[in-house]
Amino acid sequence: AQSVTQLDSQVPVFEEAPVELRCNYSSSVSVYLFWYVQYPNQGLQLLLKYLSGSTLVKGINGFEAEFNKSQTSFHLRKPSVHISDTAEYFCAVSEWDTGFQKLVFGTGTRLLVSP
Amino acid sequence: DGGITQSPKYLFRKEGQNVTLSCEQNLNHDAMYWYRQDPGQGLRLIYYSQIVNDFQKGDIAEGYSVSREKKESFPLTVTSAQKNPTAFYLCASSILTMGGANVLTFGAGSRLTVL
Image 1 (cartoon, one colour):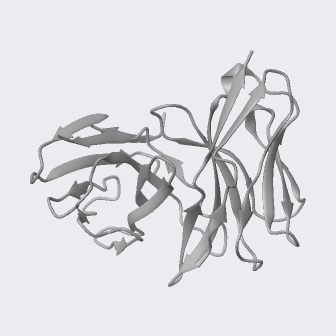
Image 2 (tube, chains in turn red, brown):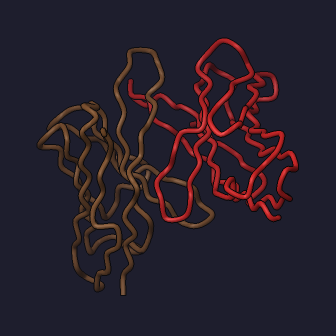
């Protein structure tokens, strides 16, 4: 079974600084990878996804992520964060179970942006 | 606009009572899912359904039940058998792709508190 590790439970950063949120997954077989963002008391919104092709994926709100197959990583980056980026970020990987594709989520990283 | 509607947003329940959370989608998606979110634990899959009148248990189905009588609707019942039901519940849906990625769209969630 797949597992997703988000080592940092919380990342504090100052506004306009760069940020990287780390994500590692367990299997090196072909996978689909996702980053979702959750604002307080809301559902999850898709930031970006890697399905195939270029290993650098660009998403909404200026975020990007790089797929690294050899390191089984899919780290999320933003060159300059805003206060409004304060939220919880979840990395997810696809898993096949009896012919059906499910998503396995990490435990999340809370990004705290301060002025 | 298409989307997923979850209701109620907040729900309080006494111990020993069953409660049903509603999830309705107008995206014409085939698959629907229920996840449970607890602080520091990410999202865990409760049940999922690929087609009407069919559903499968996820990783933490004990104490929960679902039905899928209509394509648009996938209600979740939290029964008295669920030992620790206080949590944030998220409903999601996706199209089903052959060999492709099932990209999930989430509702805004329902917060259940057991008194």
